[in-house]
Length: 556
Image (cartoon, rainbow, N blue to C red; front, top):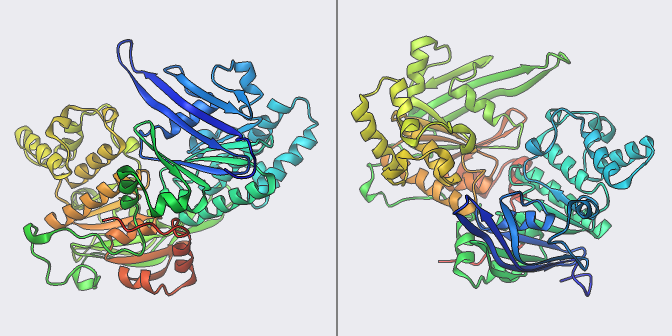
């Protein structure tokens, strides 16, 4: 504890109970306890389902109808929060305890201007204030969290801001009434490493300037280690370990903590490999050369320009980009949000036509394919998207989801498709009994395995993975990366792997392309790019990767 003799927030023996139905319930949090001092940053880390967000919502009085605090105490500045009525909460939540939720797309009202939403937070807790004073405060807050042209941004709607700007706006909203504590629930999990670093740097500055305490909920142990005064590790709703970053990261006492640390990808490591004794023999040209003669896909000088009908301006989403995906290997494409990665993915999969340039697949120009030929091409090139919650139809059983591409391309009959579904489930490490489940009955990691299985259903030669693990906890992420590497070794499938996470890219890529503002600024083998980056931008991306302030103990 730092900065005070009495903790600002004290959570003691907290129990939270969820009612699933009249007869079924479970304890999401059991006996959780920790303290946060004024000006201190405490991180709660753990896997999905460990109780992190439930603990945060209990502190904020936002548990919902199916959950209740059944034991323990939450004291804020000496006041007991459990059992507070709604009217009393208004004087605490938003006024003295701010909240930064995870997803700004969901948390911001798309129909209201950014400035109006922050102004509402001010007037809700401060009573009658002159409009000019409120407007001045909104602009001041937006500037304080690092948003450029705050007066202009205040008049914009959420869809007109980047992901990083929207997250900053949520932080500004949390600061609106100068709270003593901010609870931040995964505030940077969906952001690029450079934007994440900028936002966390601003949080550190605000702590120093304003003395505000931060309770950070995160699954990213690297972020927790770099930014925290203390770390609390949760497993299955219980605290299994707590201490300073130096102690927890370099000498973890619990097997669960060691397992979390071992799952964190490391830019200093190499590519993941599998025991290939039982796998297919290697190609004559090993993955990594990316020579065009051995590439499964080559894009040459492709361009994509988007035109703004309102302003009449143009945005070069992809500008003279050339790439080659090694046959049987992986091309990693890395860059910040807006760098053109996803636009490039849509071009090579022929979901979007390029304005210029060519795309060759397996030696054939596919740029102008239409109709049946384009449909046949898509059988051989498949995609895996970022969000398994959105990419699977919630009405379809897993069997129907996996059989659908087979049916769509006229592959096999009902019996053979059922057999292929079983093969696919086995390939991605899921029991065949999952065939009868709906997506809502599965975890995020299980859903992403289904999404990968669906992409492999038609036996494609190339799979494009667009941020396919960025929404997953580190332990689940590690399982999916291991799965992808194993499947590649067994089937010889090629990958184009898109990510903003350089540590993840390092684990699966043979070759790397670094994009910025629609252009390729660096390209080469993964070993070369990570060991000796040639441009300042790549060096800046590597420097922004969290987890460098407290080197982790090597765990065997």
